[in-house]
Amino acid sequence: MMSVFWFGWMQLQLLPIALTFVTPTVSFTLQSSPPLSLSTGILNMGILNRVTPDKVSLEIKDPVDPKALEQSKAIMSELKQATGSKVDSKSLLEVAKRFGDVPSDATSFTVSKEECKAAFEQLSDQDRTALVNIHGRVKAFAEMQRKSVNDMEMDIPGGKAGHTVSPCQAAGCYAPGGRYPLPSSVIMTAVTARAAGCETVVLASPKPALITLAAGYIAGADYFLCVGGAQAIAAMAYGVEGQDDMPSCDVICGPGNKWVTAAKSIVNGHCGIDMLAGPSEVLVICDETAQASVVAADLIAQAEHDVVARAILLSTSAKLIDDIDNQVEIQVEALPEPNRSTAREALKQSFAVQCDSIEHCIKISDDIAPEHLEIQTRDAMKVGQSCANYGGLFVGEHAAEVLGDYGAGPNHTLPTGGTGRHTGGLSVFNFLRIRTWMRVDDAQASQGMVDDSITMARLEGLEGHARAAEARSSKKPRTT
Image (cartoon, rainbow, N blue to C red; front, top):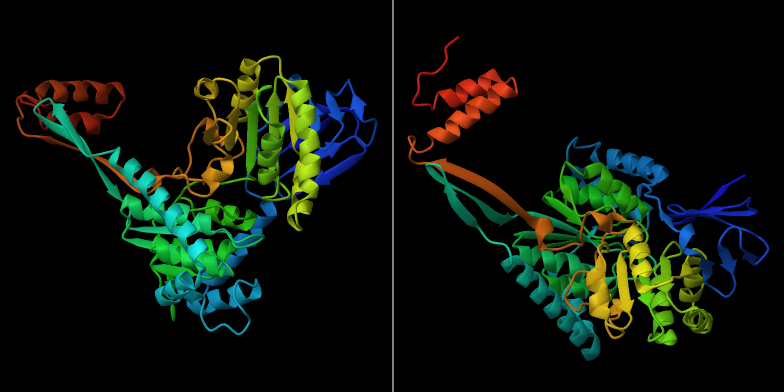
C-alpha cells in the first residue's frame, strides 16, 4: 500500500508505514525501519531526513484547521450575541479571562498609551536601544515603499484617467503572545500600517510582556488589546462596544496560531486580511563554500519557532550535508528548554536533499516556494536572482534570516505553504487602496470610445449598456 509523507505542504510517496504523527496543520509518516530505504528515497541517518530529489513535490493544503474554524465561529457568535453587530466589551473580557489572555481578576482587556510608555521607560538601555534601532530601520524601509507608488494620470479620448493612492483608515495588527513574546511582530505590523498612512492602529497581543508593551509604545499604537486568538480578530474586525469602545478595522494583519488563522478566514471580506499563514519555514541553498556551522544555526533558528516549523536544506555537496547534520545535532543539544524540545520536534519533519547542480536546487526551491530562502553559494546574488518563488530572500552567508526577523528593514511577515508563488509579504501596500478615476471634458473627441463601447456592449448582449453609451453619442441613438 502506498502512503504519504507530509512535510507541511511537501508530499513524499512512501511504502507501507509503521508510525504516523499528526499535528494541527501537518501530518506525516515515518518508517520505523530500516534506516536506509533505496526504494522510498528516504535515508534516516543523523537528525535531518535525507530525501532524493524525485521524492519532493508540492501539495497545497488548506491552512485553516477545520476544528479551529468551528471553535472560532462559536467564539465570535458568543462575542456578538449581545450587540448583534459589534463585539460586546463585557463578553470579550469574560472570554479573554477564560482563555488566559488576561488575569482572572482583570477589569479591562486594554492597556493605555501611558502604560505602554512606562514599559518602554522601564527597559534597560541595551533593550531600549535595540528596540529604537529596529523601529527606525523598519520605518525607513516602509516609508521608502510608500514613496514607490504615487498618484498618476494619463490622456484618454476627450479627457483624463488616472489613479489615486490612499491608505485605509484603521489597521488591526496582531502579535503572537504564546510560546515566546514577539515584540518584533508588533514593529513589523504597526509601524508598516502607520507608514502607509493609516490614521488608527489597533494592536492585539495576549499576555503582553514588558517588551511587547514597549514595542506598542514606540510603534504608535492607538489601542492595545491584551487579547489573543479568534476573540482578538473578532474585536478588530467588528469593533468593540461597551466599557472599552474600539473602532472596527479595515485591514487585519499579523501571524498567529490556528485560531487566529481560522478567524481571519471568517472575517475576510468583511475586512481585508494580509494572508492565511501556515507553519513557518526556511530553505537553504548551499554549495561546498558554505560553513556547516552557520547553515546549521540557521536551520535550528527556524526549527525552534514551533513544533510544526520546517527547515529544508538543498546542497550539491554530500559532505556538506553530513557536516551540517552533525552541527545541527551538536547545536540543538546546546539549546535551553523549551527551545531544544521544540526544535527537535520540528526537525523530525525537516529534510535535506542532495542535488546534481545549483540549477537543480533552484528548481526544487521554486516548486516549494519557501517563506524564507537563504542562498549560501558562490555568486550568491546571481543564484538568488535566478529563484522565482519565495517570500523573503537572504543573499550570502552574512544575510542571516534572523536579521530579517529582527528588523534589517524588510517585513518578516511572509507567505508560507507555497503561496509565495502568487503573493508577497506584508508591506505598506496591504494598507493602501489604488482607486481609478476618469473624466471626459470634450464629448466630441470621445466619440470613438463611445462607438467602441456601443459595439462591445451589443457583442456581450447587454443592450442597456449599449443604450447608455448611445446617450453620449453624437449620432442618433437606437430607440427600439
